[in-house]
Amino acid sequence: MKHGWNSWDGYLAVHEKVLRFFAKFMENPKPYQILEVTDQFRILKCENIIINTYNGTRLRVDIRKQVLLEQQHGRLMAKTFRYAYGVFRPNPDGSQLIRYNSPHDDHNQFHHRHDHTVNPAVITRIGEDEYPHVGEFLNEVLTTF
Amino acid sequence: MANSEITVPEFDLHDEIESSELVKQARELDRHPAPTVAEAIALAERKLNELVAPSGLPAKEYISKVEFGLMKDESFGEAQFLYDMIQNLRRELK
Image (cartoon, rainbow over all chains, first blue to last red; front, side, top):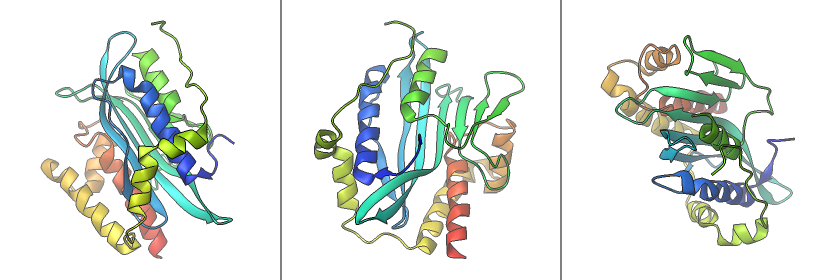
């Protein structure tokens, strides 16, 4: 399974490592922030990352995850519950390019990818366990634009 | 650098956990009591309202317009993310 349960500590360490790995492409490398929502949920986010792609395109990337926490066999375990990864043209343009979203309650009730680089924009359905890891998303940004 | 996909190298998770600033940050958070679900909803709603306030639109309308490409998302996806989270938390309350 691609997106299963992991230890909370391992989940954080992997995310931190991946972000550090891609720091060389960032103008403003920054760490994730953890926000405590309730005792069962945390938000992990890193916003307004400015990335320079292989082609020299300057883009803004935002990563947000809502993480479900659960004690399993005496160990705190974590699993991504909701996520939103977006890539935008930096301000003042600020337009959306690609966005990955977990299912919404009232529309697009499935994992999906928005592609605003085409007109009209295209929404592609993604299998429940097939949405990209952050590293895969950053690879896509670096190689696509 | 080649214009191709790169692979994140494998690493020793134990060492990474021990040296992780993020893990330290999480442990620090755990020292304090977490908000209740009702408090979390109130906090998220306040943040969401702050984000959409400059548009003069209610949150749901703002999100719909962004979703259909009818306006620029000044929140860069955060409004939708918070809106989804609030719906989820409301279900927790029921």
